[in-house]
Structures are given as C-alpha cells and as structure tokens.
Amino acid sequence: MFGSKKNEPAVKKSNGMSSAPSHALNSLVQGTEVKGTITSDNDIRIDGKLVGDLVCATKLIIGPTGAIEGDVQCENALIEGSFQGNLVVRSTLHIKENAQIVGDIKTDKLIVDQGAVFNVTCNMSTGSAPTFTKKDKKVAEKANA
Image (cartoon, rainbow, N blue to C red):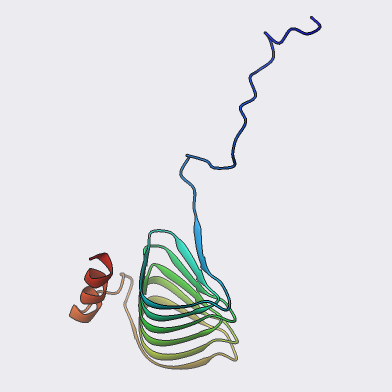
C-alpha cells in the first residue's frame, strides 16, 4: 500500500541516447566550410559549404544558404542553394525555385521549380537507376578508402 513500490513498473532513467537504430540527419551548418570527401549512410543537410566530393546512401538536402562544389552521389536530392559539379541521383532530384545548378547531372526523376537556375547537361535514365561511369566509381572508391 503506502510506501510499497512492488507493483509499480520500474522507471529507467535515460541519458537521452538511444541504442535503437534511428534515421539520423547529418548537418553542415551555415558558416562552416569543409574541403575534402564526405561519406554518409544517413541523410545529410548542407547549409554551409562543401568543396569536394560527397557520397550519401540516402537523401542530400542543400539548404538555401548551402553550396557544394564537387562530385556528388546520392539516392535522392533536394536543392535550394547552389551546386556546381557532377551529380548522380539514383532516384529523385528536386530543384527548388531559388536553387542555382551548374554542371552534369544523371538522375531517374527530375523536378525543377519555376525560377531555378538550371544550367546543366542532364542525362535521365528510363525507369532504372542511373549507372555510374568510371569517374563516378572512382569518386565512390576514393570516398570509401
């Protein structure tokens, strides 16, 4: 009865860290510049600047203040900022109205909002994921080394 805690479920205190798998989001914040190669198994958001290569197994988001100069491979991409280089998107590439894109693109599906600057050579696959060229494979190998 009073003072007895036998029937109460045990409350486990947590430090806020979960050991269960979660869908994490990596972030490069505004005001940060990275030069080099980044690989990620999870989504990544770029609001700063990346000069180099990026291999992302899931979704890339380039925010309004974000910029990438280099070669990128990812599953899906949403671009609001600027991109210059070679971009391979295995599924859907969405270019938002304020985006500025210059370079070569390979994708399966493409959405370009009105107002976007889209100065690219674009190669779209027909119903299957884009295949990687030797250069694309070298970027992935370099990132995984």
